[in-house]
Image 1: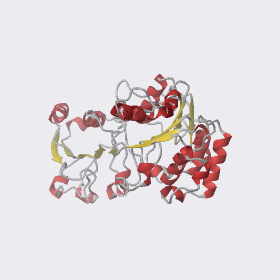
Image 2 (image 1 turned 135 degrees about the vertical axis):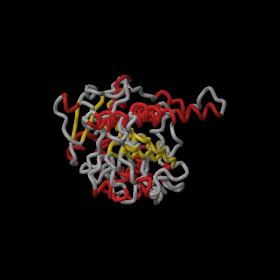
Image 3 (image 1 turned 90 degrees about the vertical axis):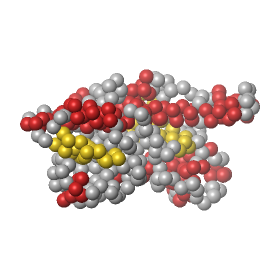
Image 4 (image 1 turned 120 degrees about the vertical axis):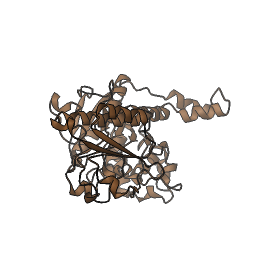
Length: 404
């Protein structure tokens, strides 16, 4: 309870100039905190070396950062809290401060929901409503479509009664659920651990007011588990759209591959990934996208690429599961499309086959950007400063064992 009168030193090391109004707000609300701001905009946001001198790290009791950390714990003996401007901490999971100390780490999870949900809906609708085709007509000053393309417009299916599966029902997943539910979609949630009662379904992290699913009431069904059979039971629920919103951990690395895409092929599902590229086996995703558009005789003649790494058995399994399900494309195989804001690697090389994958939207890890990003990330920090001074538990605390 005595935290309010304790003298603190906050070091803020971020890749943009000082947000004066926000810093004034913090100083006014917490006059006991001395603030030092280091603008790291001159360097790579995730550079391993920050260039911050040892004497700047030394007095800090609170660190606010995107990724900049002292090289070792002995450089920051007074640190009592580190707040990250990211939703996850996989980018520093091997750092000695993460692996060898008990300094509380908090994230800015919860601030990305509005803008990422909008990106997800944008890219999904661009695909389902054939916007690229429509835009090409505008560029050509064409009003009436050629006969060969008119059928595509008549095949547009709206969102009502479609089934959305959200793999990772955190703050982002909850906002996607809120918007999709308003559009008439049925939402299924998947979490690592069971949520058997109302209390366990509540969102206990930071929530942007008026967003998300605070009490967990939107999903019509919840699924959970860290094993493949549990995941497959979820993916087998005839999903029309799968949103991947998981943290990257050893358990989730390459979680989705040929087997999983075969289950999604029952409905020729659309797949969106805004988490990390390494969660998908990209070769298998490319194969699933190609299977949707390729004639059967052409499938075996694909040129050698990352997609051709997929085994013959995996291709057969994808075909069998798809034919056994309710394909929305008249028995078509594979996935009808994908939207990826994350890839493996990043940046994606210009010659990578993912760029040419059919019906695949690729954007350069920008779905989380917003003019409100910094203000909301500081709001998470300020909420924890108040909790810390009042002796309450912090929000958005990283569980080092779980990896998020």
